[in-house]
Image (cartoon, rainbow, N blue to C red; front, side, top):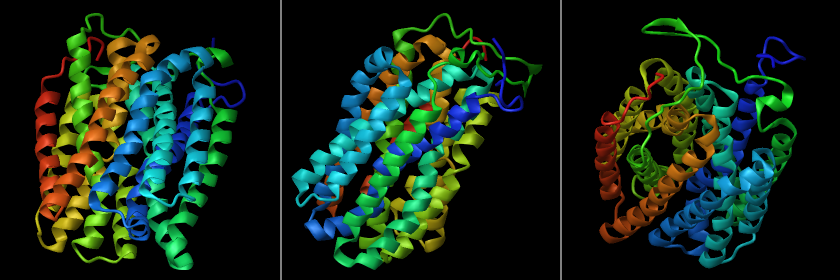
Length: 413
């Protein structure tokens, strides 16, 4: 087998997988989940939703995500990652089109649960493909480029959604769901055409590359760690749970908090959200690559410290400059954790077991995503402000820093 593609010697096909993966995350997670924050103010007003109901809509999405994670590893082993990703994105598209026709909290929550199922069933196998197509020293970088799809989606939704809302008045949120659903449908077809399950299908080996480490240049191979215990896997799951619990509180409610508590217009709040999207484009590649070079533990600690400050700065009614700083801190590390965790699981267990183990810790991650917006919405309803919710997120991120510092180092890094 060859290390490079026959038809384009300078580019390994693994990077085409990364490009398709970026589109997959753009559609499945970026539009399927993170566009909700921009849509909630108008949708909430139109359907007379309370803060608690807004939080429960987000929670419904994560319940769907959780259900998908439970079965997607099994389905992927039967039909392959490529076909599963296509079908999952198709479900995202169809369910978003159905949300555009919903007229009540119950119908929105039900259809958005289906969206969550599609998001989970597309994201887990897509991230697991990194371990098959890339060896250890390149996984953080490859996963980092895949996860920035969410950043592109946030950047676009922060501009597109307010624009369409202004053009179509009260029904703007419905048109937005329709437009986003059509885009996801197109991307599902592109992924079906590009993605391949293994390098062997094209007569290739995983891309190994060559990077500099403290010990000098070396090639990386997929030996994995030989002494992984259940405790190690649960340790990874606990860290991923804390990320899921905290980041989603900010992603779900920051725009609503800016509009309803800080008095910003939807357009201005959308500009803030677009800045999150723009800055997040650097998060995966930068911190994923740093984790390749400095170690996964160091990468996780850096990211959680920055996130802790992002949540803390927005928890209090500080001058505007601190709000900008919060947005900056959140955006610059937004998608770093999934890229590092996907690479770390591959380092721990090797490519053959990555889908199963990553699916398991993503299940735990999804529990955090379910709990986060529900608890934060309830707290906001109780206290009349999101300040306590953001403060709670900051404390949990601090706990994640401690757990990251206790991680076992994979033997081959």
